[in-house]
Length: 80
Image (cartoon, rainbow, N blue to C red; front, side, top):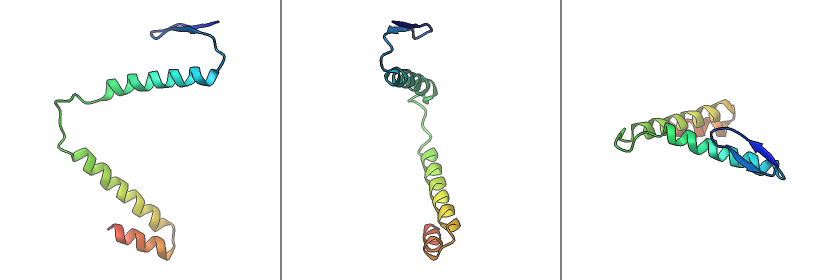
């Protein structure tokens, strides 16, 4: 039986190290998400989503342009 001490201590057999790793990762992810989530009363009016969408289109256009093929150039120009 193994014991890990800390703020989220647990005590269990380490039969499947990957299962333990997944539990720790999921716990850390939930904690980080809860700490970094904006309060529900704050609204950006979709500004962040629009900027992320624009950046995604930019990256796709840059990728296609850098392919240096006729198809890539046409796709990049289409995204403009």
